[in-house]
Length: 357
Ligand code: GGG
Image (tube, rainbow, N blue to C red):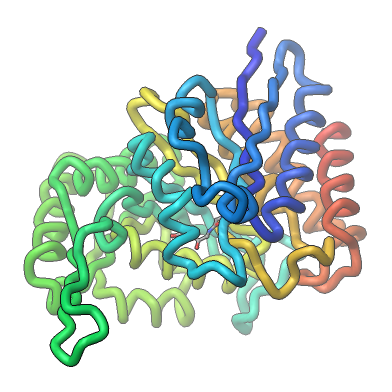
């Protein structure tokens, strides 16, 4: 009998809409799985909370979340608050506070979904991106001096630690070994220009790769990787990159597999000392928020990644299969995939598919 305590943070924008459907998916899978249940505690943190209190979460927010098995997160971002304030107020403190250094972002071209790239068939694109998640270009290291004057100075420092770099690269290789249909790890840097941090990354990549001689390896510069994601995405298997590069690459991977609305993300604390966080890759989506048309399937797939993290493999597979069936049957789809369904109709269909298994 497993009962998981989940913290639910819908956050902002369409996060509020898709999280409801993520919860429906969890309730559906619990209803058909013996001994599986969830206890939800919802937190109203995000931009509305910031307007009321001056903070995106309470001072003891991280401490409060420590008591949970996992966090289900929607999105952060507000049209009237600068993005660097919202992101650094809620999501990044959780990723760093819970040492979630391994971010996993799969991208798969499902049967029934059309890629914007000509000639790509279902399954042609099947890659998993490993994003370093707590340092690199996202480290809050830097400052501004003489602001607003003609001699203003701005410093923004990338930060790479051996522990963080080794950890994400090793996670990518171990994933290849565990899911043995994955055979190649591609590391992406810009070490011709970034001669300290990224040369270091390349060195660590070679060191870790030597422990996995059975896995094919490749190192690409990020500009080349961006081109290849568009012209030859089928060449990629497992990709590992720094915080910023993998964020950009995972958005490209999401659009070439049909929609940002299908891309899930797992922010993992590999040591399991702290809760991990599961979310859709997409953000608050100001253009469609409040309209009830956001695609909730990225959140449903994030729920499957959470179940996989818990070791609830049958339940995870049931949710993954339900998403695949929704996409293949095409009877209920949101507008990003050419349908007319609302967010809640799509979520109901996913829950129905989960129950029917
Ligand atoms: N659900 C993810 C989300 O809200 N993303 C907002 C965002 O801007 N994220 C930046 C990042 O993940 O680096």
